[in-house]
Length: 155
Image (cartoon, rainbow, N blue to C red; front, side, top):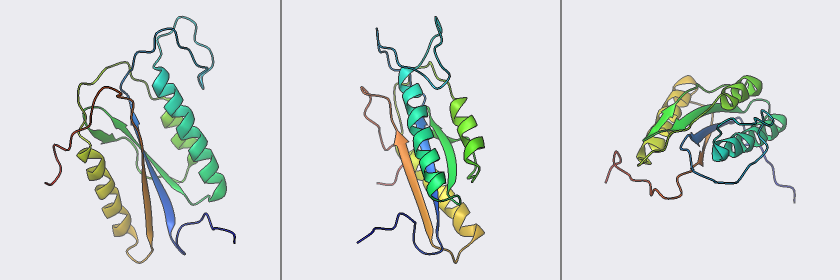
């Protein structure tokens, strides 16, 4: 039995990427980036790998369903949305590839991710209350030594 990759009938899938800009130290490690080799340039290896992940997922998903919408959020001490939902995968990936981050963060409020998703859901439902909503959040988290908190969340 073949499994359908499409969302519920009439529903448009929306992917919200949460990309961590935290800079982890990886002494002696190098990885080819989307921008090609950058001799002597400071880089955030984890962020470069995240960009490749987002690019692969976005390219694949947009080929499967051209109506898929994408949104980009970045992680500082909390999640911040930097783009509205768009079906233009090329323009979305330009935004992703422009990301840079060389700062280390000491904390992360995970409830901010849920707040952004709730806001996106409200916006989508306000545009078309009758269509089924498929909203997925994809969290790319780089802080191996920091446990996220739920500071702003309901208890």
